[in-house]
Length: 499
Image (cartoon, rainbow, N blue to C red; front, side):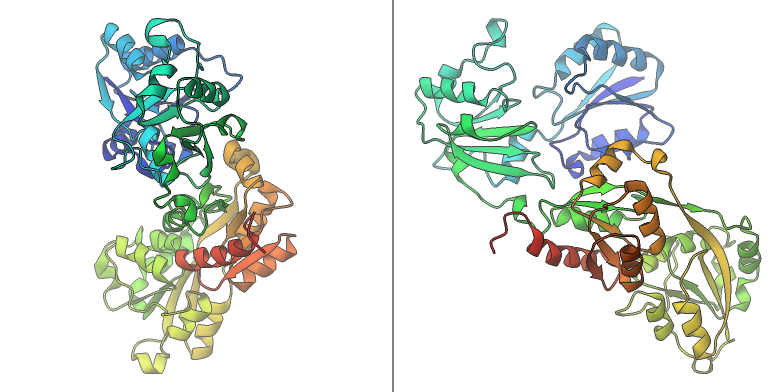
């Protein structure tokens, strides 16, 4: 039994350490802070216990209560993760928690995290040290404000910090910024000293305000913000705020596992992503009887056609082994479906080069006469699949056996994560891939929904009929195409864009 103090990093969930991610996947209990990104909690096993000990506004959570909670879980659970923002030992009160655990005889491991003190300035293009400008950096808490504290080590000596030069990185100081500025000015710091105030650093919501020490008190800023004081704050050596989708909050309406590539592409482009899986996969209406019959005789088909990763998993999950598919061609509607096949060690024989749609796959398929095999194909599909693929194949002369492999059903709004649902209602845009997602999103979020980026014209028509504003239509269901469509729309609609 061990309690692992794990640093969650500065905000971007991808900045957690490898060891931290490993422990989250193994944990029996995760005790986490308020500002930990929900994406990190999705690394946790479904059966694990999640305990929120956030100390946000209006919460009376005391540190001694958190210490007692860690001791309690540490004594009875095999693997406990205490997930703390940034690094556990940089103003994270990790030392106090370890003291309590060791006093109770509970083994402890510390997993350092990327501290916001260095990562947030870096994400804003500010190096905390720079040759010729600053050879030292001091990290200081501004939580109590100048003149506060209990004496001794509890008081920040702002006069000494002002006289010492170098870079100051102030954490938890946004509410006391005016008093901090006055103390540094009184201590002799130049009023013209550059200052950068970075809110929500390293995330798609990052916003940097540049000012001077004289102007710091008047700057509009709210928590969580990191304040950098010093000559280096005048530098801007690249910033994530230059990315094409920075400033956008984009709702992704599929599950995290089904949209991993899209989410990654959106985050890489600078967007803040809200995961709101408004639909779920359910068994076919017959419980899968027809699918099992079709798969049992799969060797009689010349081709099996896959138009989704879900169909791939449903079919290959009941195939006995690869020998059942000997002599059977495999076609995939696009690269994402081909990748799902590859996870099962299957290689698609046909993938449309440019048009990842049912019509595109039908066009890419040979005719039965030119193929040299039987004229029968198996099409395992969603219950509400569109007609472009089977109709296109029939027009070429194929006999198409359609079998319902799964259903896409809406997730009731009461079953969706409340924070994600609230964030979705204030989002910049929403990505919808099918009419079923349009209907489910409209029901869950309500109208007005955020402007929609739709996959294909059919989905766009469904969105308009549902009362949504269609921001853009992606011609292909690929992450790059969706990012491109969003980027073009955001270039026109970004707040503050010059006319």
